[in-house]
Length: 272
Image 1: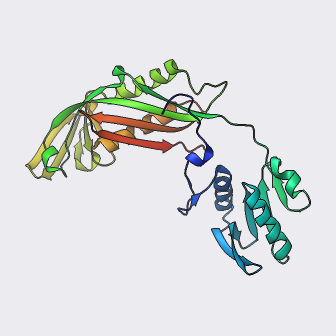
Image 2: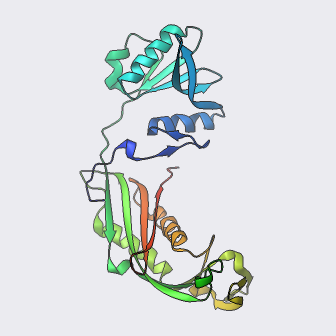
Image 3: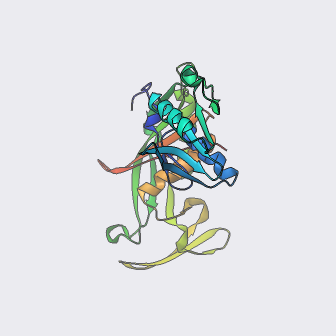
């Protein structure tokens, strides 16, 4: 993905705590607010208006909520307001729709600045790291072995003055994280049976037999889950996110394990 490529809100996928796939950040914000207030809701609820089925964005015990994203939503909202006189209905939309719905009540207009979203990717030889691991659940990889992996990082977020983040700043952050992982032995923490303060004792039964290892703590990195390249991608993201500028909204990590194979994980950053 090239620097400065246009990324629309529709390029993202927003999922609420119920697992619903929402259409926009506005819908996600409403879902989060309702959950915070402990108000149960049904997303994309079907109602019958004038003999035809219409989907309304949110149905609660208190009333209906419609997000105005386009002119079709405006017509739908007007039809609901005029036909469902006994129901409480509120609409939320951008001021650009105000002239078309000004005659109706229960409208919430939100004003947002125009946000320019962009992405950059950074790949550098200094991001490569050496490591050893064991995958007891995979016969071929169930012995101690090592890799040299190269890494590419993708950052997505709100640009300021046509700039997402300075490449030098991003490169410095990534190198700091990779130094934490370089020349480490990765292993699932479930195989840890003892910690004497200096060493970890790792034991497991695998396809090649029983392993019983004592390894120095400072050269070992315990993981939540198996030491796969997919899990290493996730671990790098966990380490990168706290160091990222506030305008970064998502981080992706590509790891190449050898030639022409690897893993890619991209994660949206949760803003607290």
